[in-house]
Length: 83
View 1: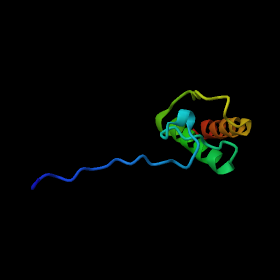
View 2 (view 1 turned 90 degrees about the vertical axis):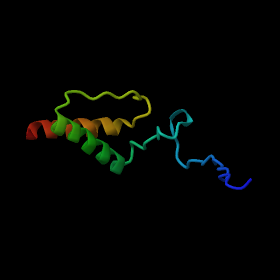
View 3 (view 1 turned 180 degrees about the horizontal axis):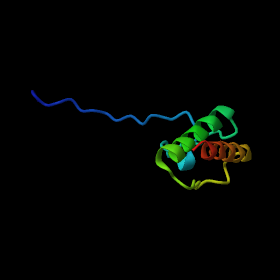
View 4 (view 1 turned 180 degrees about the vertical axis):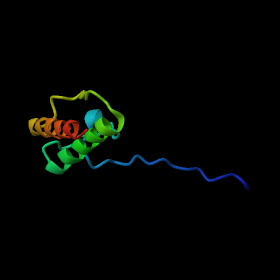
C-alpha cells in the first residue's frame, strides 16, 4: 500500500558480559579488579561527602571479593576524616 510506513524489526542483542539473573541492566562487576574497586570507592565517597549519606547497603554480599570491602572501608574512613 502506498503511504504505509515500513515495518520495523526488533532484534535481540546478545550482551557480552555476565549479569545477575541474565538481566543486562545488572552487570556482574569484577570487584577483585583494582580499577573496579577504585571506581566503586570513589562513587561511595561522592555519596558520603556530597550528600551526607550515613550508611552503605549491599544486596549481593556473597559475590563481592573480600578485598573490595577492605578498600571501601578504608576509602570511606579517609573521606570521613577529611570532612
